[in-house]
Image (spheres, rainbow, N blue to C red):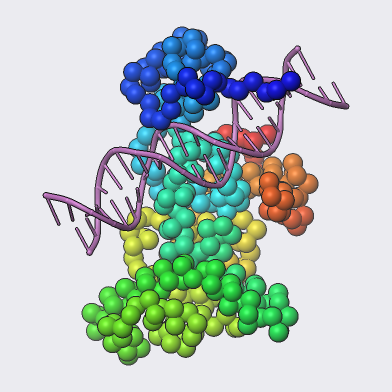
Length: 324
DNA sequence: AAAGGTCGCAACCGCCTACAA
DNA sequence: CTTGTAGGCGGTTGCGACCTT
């Protein structure tokens, strides 16, 4: 018995929805609800696939949706939950009233990923790039270290270049202040050289950097990374974004990660403002750990959490949409 | 002003899961 | 228990708007 397609592909319209189609779908759903998506386009007089109707409704037409900009608070929520849950957009979206998984996913892919990379944070692991390189270097036996650590640097090259570009701008700004350091001036003197070559060199040859060996991955720590973190241009704080929430998870115990995250202004106001979010995050994590016996396997078989995950005793009332 | 590049978002695709028959 | 199906989900693509050169 073959599977019946959800719609007849030949007779189905695709692409952008017109206002007339939106109106037909909305008024049909207002009258009859959303019980059988396969029948809805037929009954509503639409030449659309049922799945297409469902997506249009859930992602755009639903009356309870917010269509404006994602707020700073919402960004905090997304980043924090993503650090715990990974790409589970529907779960993350459930904590953001009026936002869909598609909204969250799009915002993450277009804005937040770049923002985190620009701050020197790997958007997948939520750890500083320097921390990852250190982990690689310390995990490997000595003969492997130079080759694989360099390979790792290759993986992060784009992010590193981004970081270095930002740092360069910062240093140039410092140049205009009386307190500009000798190192800064020396660095800016190379302005006329090919920027890409210089930056690539800087990655391979940490000593060329004007600051205190931040890329020396043989002895790298995220503490020295945090120095860089603090020195980023004001752009991130200007946009209201602080990455100070990762300490809410298992990393918030004085680990290198939390040290690097909780420097300067990143770990004060933002934490207070989001204590409720913290509870929410913990509860979700606890739920997931409980469900999965301490392990969460992704579709490709990789494990997100291990058995050492801690369970918190947080009332589920703290959740917007408690996961019970 | 035009061409090319980038960004942001809506929509689609294919896989997975729950559930009914 | 097996199979078929609808709905859900995350990844990816397409395209219009905006920006830069």
